[in-house]
Length: 174
Image (cartoon, rainbow, N blue to C red; front, side, top):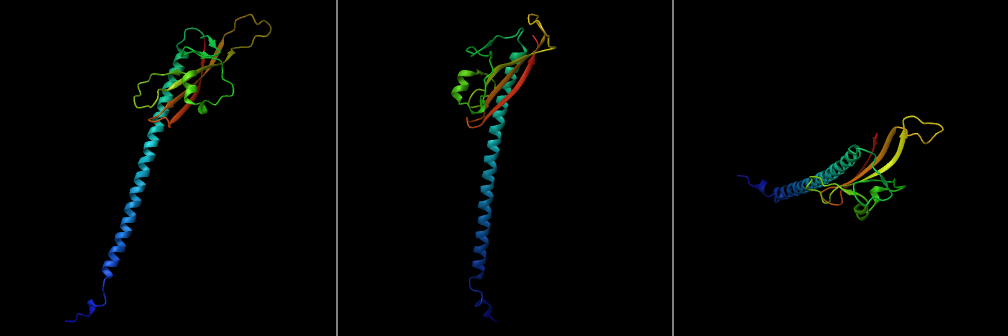
């Protein structure tokens, strides 16, 4: 009945178990933080994808407007009734324009996207006419060719912080 072994192990099990508990707690806190960060990244990606989808639907609406015209639309210096074709904006960065500028200078597309914070918008600009073959001399003859338009669209996600601006060029014969 030797009980001397108990005298040398005072509290060692408690210290080791507390140290293991501390390590497990730190690992659990780290795992929770990583999970929260992944949830935020996933929500941001979903927000950005929705803004891209909204901009894409507005871009398609602008393209379809150009492609469904039976004759060449009149080109305005500044559009007041949207959609319409307007002169090309020179040296303008559409992505940096504030929402107030977009509301007064673009057409609103009434999409079926119900989760967006704001309706997507688009602008149609006349780029140029490219004749099929250049005619030297007389400018009075009507030549055939392609009319090019630039369509720029802006879409929003769940919040106004997620914004996508897309741009395409559409060619059409009239």
